[in-house]
Length: 221
Length: 268
Ligand SMILES: Nc1ncnc2c1ncn2[C@@H]1O[C@H](COP(=O)(O)OP(=O)(O)O)[C@@H](O)[C@H]1O
Ligand SMILES: [Mg+2]
View 1 (cartoon, helix red, strand yellow):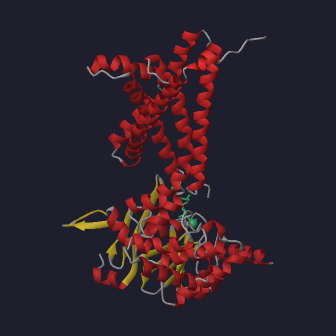
View 2 (view 1 turned 180 degrees about the vertical axis):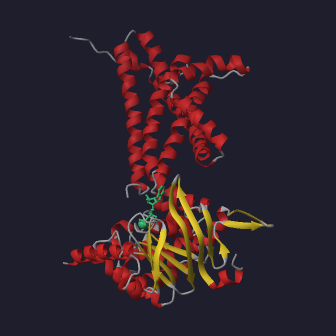
View 3 (view 1 turned 90 degrees about the vertical axis):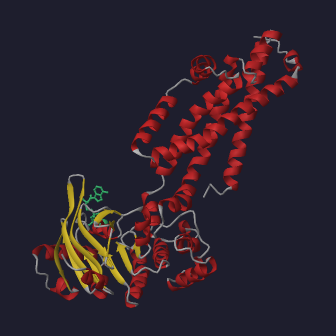
């Protein structure tokens, strides 16, 4: 095998790669901005809401967790506008699809983190007369957070990888950009090597930042 | 029905208390009155319902039937007009500020240092001034001999130290009743003494205490009354001299024999 590597054409338009990477980060940030608050609400409803609400949340979470993200993205881009008469841009459709699915994962993550706090902690807090809200705020959430935060960052990595599926609805993120470059340059091997490296750099940086914050916030204790 | 006046003179009145978990009846009709300042030891084999009884007093367990009164107030229920409704979160919280509980497994808050473990109740529940609460917490730490550990985290303490902090945490709320659920059972033998000493001091100060314990010597020394439970019932109750020296029931005798054998074995 003596393949002649040639990256020149592929990296020529580096601004385009930068834009694409920016779009990847943008759609991930937007999806997380939707997923985190929604996930918290879902977890709260599932744990402390009245029974019908709990069942609704369980249904939602199970449905979202068993859906293929690619199908969700396509559905929000093509089916949703036809059903509801609201057109979503590729960016919006990807944000909503990724955000709604990630919210379900995040809700489960929060619930598991809270349930993992020892029963003795709940009882000790109640025994000194804490009301439920005070107990959750001062005793349960801080301990749950230590379990949630590290896993949240691996969820972020999943979101970044998942965002590559937005290429199918022509959202100009990294994977879509790669398909364009590859078609223009006839250099698919170099193109996808470059895009793989960019993903690696983004996700690796995110995970380094994550462990930095974990340490900074004293989550190791 | 007894009149409220009787209940008011009592610290705790437990009347015909039944408690089931699913189909399993764990408490089968407990009647027990505890006077102000009294120290009552609950003894009995594992699974006899001692912990459950203790937890019914501060309503960590709901009652299946019967009633518990604390200082004349019905536990777990509130009267609206002439109907009894379930107590609300805030009613239970208020009740529990007056009842301290010490757990077998300490249950200190691991994310808070020792001083904060003790202050958090007074500050966040009783809304006490932070500086005052801190001074009182330090005084309590002094009292349990752990002032030098104020800034330590629970994981850095021995079991005996953790339990002493847990006692201080309960006392910080200025309770008028203390519940101890096998406070020394999870400790290495050489650490039992330091915790029993703190409990002994507390008893000497006049605190009303309900103590679930396997430390028979301690029970004999501090209690006004020893209650032997088995299979969810009070089998025998009386002053320690009587229950320990001349138990009336065969089951009590058998239990004491077994426990004393085991403790003798532990010492030698
Ligand atoms: N939350 C619970 N759910 C089901 N069974 C329980 C629960 N708590 C206690 N039990 C059962 O009730 C019985 C009495 O338990 P417990 O009060 O802990 O006894 P003791 O403290 O005397 O050892 C045991 O058989 C125990 O398994
Ligand atoms: Mg027990």
